[in-house]
Every structure is written in C-alpha cells, then in structure tokens.
Length: 292
Ligand SMILES: O=c1[nH]c(=O)c2[nH]c(=O)[nH]c2[nH]1
Image 1: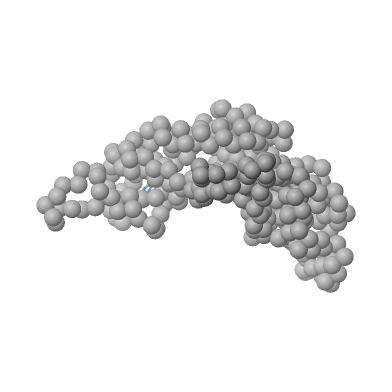
Image 2: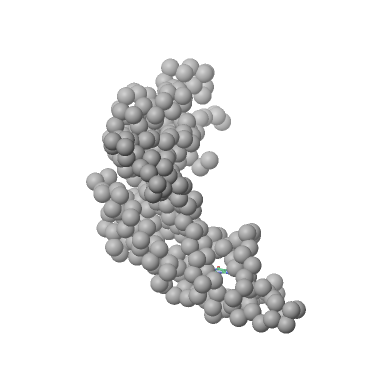
C-alpha cells in the first residue's frame, strides 16, 4: 500500500473588496467577496514543504485588489475570468484556478451622488473554473427570499404511523432561493442574462400554482432553460420556510388563514437540478472541486 496525495487546491478565501468608481461627483460602488483557489503541480509543498511552486495566498489576495485598480471591475464573471486566467497563464506550476465572487448590492440614497443604503441580503454569485486554456462559468444568486400568501397546496403524501402533518389546499409558500446556473460558453452578456434569469425565477415562483415546493423548483429551472439557450443546467437549493397557522381557538377566535407562526427551524430543504438532457456529460464546472 502506498499513501498518495489526493485532489487539492489552495487560495485566499473571502477577500472583501469594495471598489469606488468616480465619474465627476457621481460615485458607483461595487462590493464583492472574492475567493481564489489554485491547483496544479503542488505535490512538493505537501510532501516536503518546498514552496517554490506555491504562489502565496497573500499574493493572490493582493492580485484581487490590484486588478480592481488596474481596470474597472465590470461584470463579476469577467472579473473572475481575468483573475483565473492570470494565475494560470503566469505561474507555470498552476494549471487550474477557481474564482468565486459574491456581489452585495447597494442602492443610492437620493440625497447626493455618493451615499448608499445596503440592499437586501440577496447576493449575485459566480464561480469561474479555469483549466488550462478552457474556462467554465457557473453564475447564480443566493438569499433571494420570496413568499406567496396563496397559490400553494400540499396533499396526497403517504400517511404512516408517524405522520401528523395535515393536508392543505391553501398555505403560505416561502423560501430563500439559492440558484446556480451553468453556462454553455463564455461569450455571454452576463448582466442581461443574470437580470432575465432572476426575473424568470421570480415570475415562475409567483405564477406557478404549487402542489409542492419540488414542483415549483422544477418549474423555475424549466422556465430558465426554455428561455435562455446560453444555460445548460440550473441547480437550486430552496429551504421550505414553514408558516404554521396559529391555533387561536382558546381565545374564541377563528383563524381563517390569516395569522401564522413563521418557524425558523427545522425547515424542509428541497434541492434539485434541471438540465438539458444533451448537457448531461458536461458537468465539468460543477464537479472539479475536491469534495471538502
Ligand atoms: O412542498 C413541500 N414538500 C415537501 O416535501 C414537504 N414535506 C412537508 O412536511 N411539507 C412539504 N412541502
């Protein structure tokens, strides 16, 4: 038996970058969390501590900030592609890079051109994988919290000795959407694609009459794939943010689907992917990360 080094990567996680661009007195801010990971010929540092091929994580961090100064950040996908390609093309030992970016939104305060109020907790995300001269982009969003106060049912499930859940033909459906979609290429209008996919996710959540959150998840992914030819696959993770009808009968009050207890935990966790059947074997962008 021999002991060998398995898949590995290293980098600087969660660099917090705020870039201000100034056009006269009008400022624009970009607020990003950027993580870089490099892969390649890195056996020596693991086996002997020889760091001659290890571009320091501190250098990776500096590169993120320097790149934000040297050119406009632009779309998060382009920024991540620039960084990933830089590491792979300038370090002989580095054959692959993965760059993750979360963008936090800020809105203007009307009082002037340089004051902002933080938006919701929702983030736009991208994960770029560079492998030699190839690149894959998986973009998405997370913490997009949505709720509909009707148009959702849940019934017909198995009743076993442990089942207490009542069937319902009218319930609140609420979730916090994490969605990631894999692009077929890199020649994409990233901003337009993001905006339209987000709209499709929201519109489908709102308009699809739901018999389960699973059905809603599938419909949301299907809507994206039907409308957006540049996307091969959509993966979603959607916690079921349960809203329980409060029993007010002790007070002689009837609760006609009006007063709910918004439970924090536990929550149902509904996850799944929707994809084109001819895109099944192109999982590279999802599956190159070591499982840790
Ligand atoms: O939409 C739902 N899917 C489930 O799988 C489930 N399970 C549950 O208890 N409530 C719900 N709701």
